[in-house]
Image (tube, rainbow, N blue to C red; front, side, top):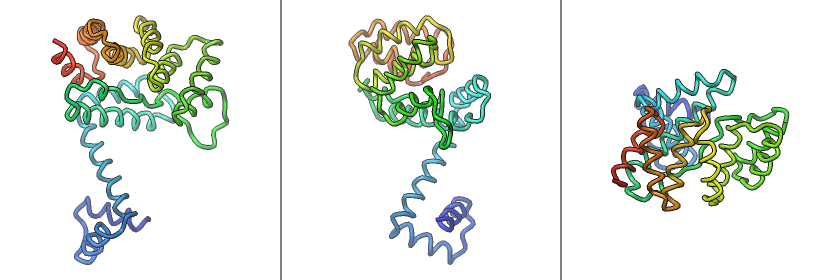
Length: 230
């Protein structure tokens, strides 16, 4: 595996000699493990190209300003994932509004192996494992003690991922008037959920409000949706 990594890195750096190039070509055509690893490197390169976009840079700077902990790199990686998915939907989805919805990653409390398990970790572990029903139960228990808006946001995301759009919409409306770390994301998902529930006037109002406030999250997708709604 390590030799594969070295070979691929040298390939991307244009440093393969003739013998190594022959080995690379052979593995790329015949070895499934090597091909999968090569694909991972290509995806990573694509992510770094996307990160050069000003919107992604702004998002990451914003994320860094909100979080001063050891998991910041996990959160940045998740942020990059959002934009990779968003760009795919922007260019290939047309006016299929369902395609604008994607699961929001856990950037609030990233799960690390070996960490002591507390209620917060149990909740977000369930969320990451897409066990949304259990995640909601855990979120509700946490919210009894403290009405943390970020926890409510992930409860809303869990409801959306379960297809419970009406319940999610009600919670997103409640969060939309609160200034917290995920205010922009809340308005984005509020607009998408409104469209999916055929409440397009609310969606337009929300998207226009995001524009008026100079919000950067999903800026290009917002423009495309508004152009289609008008």
